[in-house]
Length: 158
Image 1 (cartoon, rainbow, N blue to C red):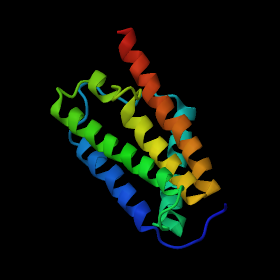
Image 2 (image 1 turned 30 degrees about the vertical axis):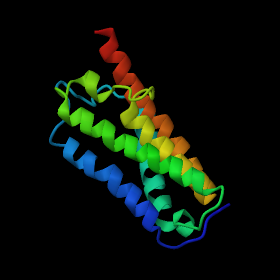
Image 3 (image 1 turned 90 degrees about the vertical axis):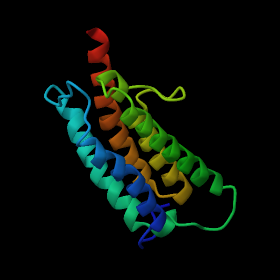
Image 4 (image 1 turned 45 degrees about the vertical axis):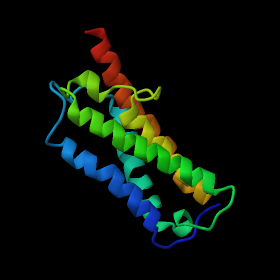
């Protein structure tokens, strides 16, 4: 429940899947993007959640493959969400890269660029049975998804 310390290669794979498109995004941001008016509480929660989630996913060996069991379905679901996240990024990079593209839904998932990875990491936390990961993901989700919803609402008002 509290986790076993040790390196997680599954966590590293998830982090690579998360970081590569985000690094590309730094050069291909949407037209008119600005973080100036973001809710400060959401920003703090997002940053704290990012640090905690990154640490948890890498330092708990509970996320590594543990043989086939009913718990494996949680890992499979988390991986499917991360693949959906990658596909969402491909769609974004092929788009005109407007704000509406960046805050878009994907297969019914609202603000998919924020929601898919947060939920994937949460499911990974369930798979590993690591309470710290679940807490970190809730903190991250409130901040990260909150910021994306704020931005999406702003462009809908225009």
